[in-house]
Amino acid sequence: MADPQFNKRLAWISQLQAVRETADRAAFAELFAYFAPRIKSFLMKSGTTPEMAEECAQEVMVTVWHKAHMFDASKASVSTWVFTIARNKRIDMIRKQRRPEPEDLPWGPQDAPSQVDTLALQQDTENLGRALADLPPKQRQLIERAYFGDLTHAEIASETGLPLGTIKSRIRLALDRLRHAMN
Amino acid sequence: MTQSIKHHLTTPLLMGYAAGTLPEAFSLVVATHVSLCDECRAALAAFDAVGGETMLAAAPVAMADSALAATLDKIAMGDTVTDVPHRTGPYPAPMAAYMTHPPKWRKIGGGVKQIVLHTGARATVRLLKIPAGSAVPDHGHKGTELTLVLQGAFADQTDRFGVGDLEIANEDMRHTPIAESGPDCICLAATDAPLAFHGLLPRIAGRIMGI
Figure 1 (cartoon, each protein chain N blue to C red):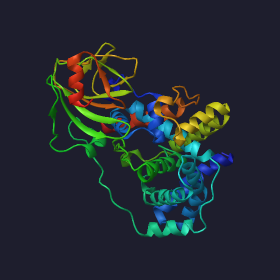
Figure 2 (figure 1 turned 90 degrees about the vertical axis):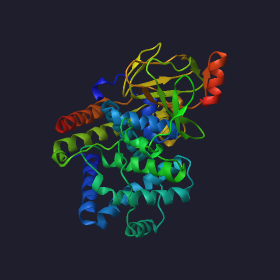
Figure 3 (figure 1 turned 90 degrees about the horizontal axis):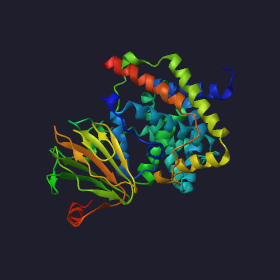
Figure 4 (figure 1 turned 120 degrees about the vertical axis):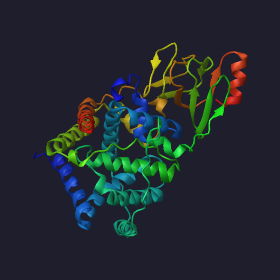
């Protein structure tokens, strides 16, 4: 738990909670300072002009504020959640397409995020980030190009070299629990 | 339902959807399959996480000095409320924005009916309704064809496909899907290139059907 990167992930969760519960501007400013420049960078690497990337990154942070109540720390890390908002804004504002989203699952109040699940998922995401950084440069670049939009699906390799099994199994278990609760 | 699905999304489709780079027609098929399949929902969460970590690894680019203030001003203007789409009959929620009520089926020959849901620059997605026992004419593919079963089942030279199953056909595949007995087979089908029909009549039919 002394790992600073891991603690940073937990801090983002608290900051998002403060935004949601008390409309805390200082907490939002911390999230903004960390994420906005990275969203902007991601959009520019996807071929967006700096002006449009700036505008779009601001819009992403507006959505982060408004949708803070929908974030569930046992299902995703804040970095994953912010990424999905940024990706959707890119489709909407820059590619001007609709984005069909999967049906929402009825995660009920009986399924309040457990602290154990939350910590485990944050750790899984942290490990995934490290595995990505440790990939041979060529392989890492292929993944980056896929996410920055330089590759078509036909050009994406079926082997990523990333250990996705752990995070996938953990979410799969949470889904199984939800299905049992629904029955 | 989710346990009985045998044919799933592949890494290129999951990663392309997570990256937001698939043609809209393909995204609709992916979102609809994920609505039916917990296995792929979990896999997609993993690919979203890869996207998040890829974004974090990018060297930050400074925002304008006034950016935070401008963002707080936009926040103060309030949120726009959007309706949450829901499932109708065999059609999962992501399809709601593409359908009319009641659905307007058009006959395209051989008892087969279709509704074109979306045509984009890179791909087209349609609903097909194939009466039990009928066949879609023998065809090959120039690009990729995704076929997701929503009702009934079909079988072709490769396997049987029931509700929630996704068949991915590429250039090297030529097949004649036949609907099983029972309810009409309804499929969501997306293509990023016209299908190549074999035989003169199917070729003409293909032109009329626009597939």
